[in-house]
Length: 312
Image 1 (tube, rainbow, N blue to C red):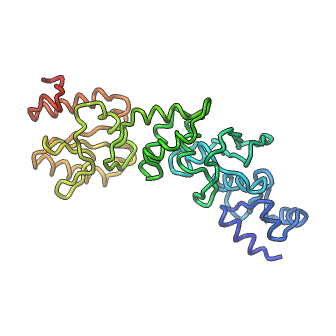
Image 2: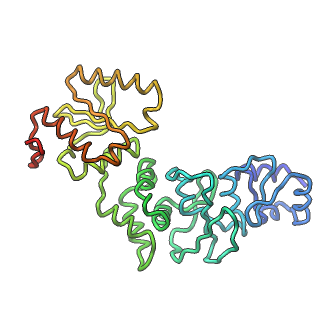
C-alpha cells in the first residue's frame, strides 16, 4: 500500500481524512486499525481520522467534521463565519456542522449538529479547502443563533467583498418563509442600511458610517488623499478630517509616528483633525456628534443641508 497518497490527501485537508476516502485509496477498516496501532492515524470526528504527524488545529477538526459520514458535512453558522473571516472564535467554541439531509446525529463533544428545515443554498463552496456555506447563507444562519453579533459579521463580509446589499436582499427573498430564524435581524439591518458605497477599510469605519447616517454630516469623502496622506473621513469644503483609531491600527509606535506627521501636516495646511476610538464611536455616539458639531461651528457652519446644528 502506498502511504504517500494517504499523506498527500490528508495534508491538503489539514491532516484529516474520511473513512470513505481511505476506502477509495484501497485501505479497508482492518488496515486503518493497523495504521492506528502503528501511530500513523488517530480517530477524529465520527468516522474520520487525523494524521498523528499533523498538529491538531481548529481547521483540522472542522475539516474532519465535513469528511465524516461519507463526506456529506458542511461547516455552517458561526464556524462558517470564522472561515470567511467574519467571526472571532474562542478556544472552546464548538464546530457548527450540517450533514446532508436533516438526520440527527449522536452528541459529539465540541460539535454542534444543525438540522435546518431551510435547505436552500446548502451546496457548499470551499474556503481554506473546507466545505462551507456561501456567505449569504452563512449570514442568515449566524443571525439565527447570534443575532446580537450579526451586524459585525455583515460588516466584515462587506469589507472583504464577500457580500453586497443587493446579494443580501436577494438572499432574504429566497430564504423568507414563516418561522425561518435569522431573517428578522438581517431584514432589519437592510431596512435601515446605514452604509454608503464609499470605501471603508475597517469595521470601525463602517460603524462611523452608521453613526453618521442620521446626522447632517453625511456629505463626507472616505479615504481622501491630502498631500502625502490618506484620511478616513474628510469634509473637503469645511476642511475637517476624522480618523477612526481602532485597536489594530494604533497598537504600534510606527502608527503613532506617522499619525503625528499626518496631523501636523494637515493642521499646518488649515485642516481640523478629529480622532475617535472604538469605545467613543460604539458607546458614546452623542459625544462624537457633539465634537463634529463644534468643528463645523468653528468653521462658521451653523446649518447643514437645511438642518441647524445645536450651536446655531
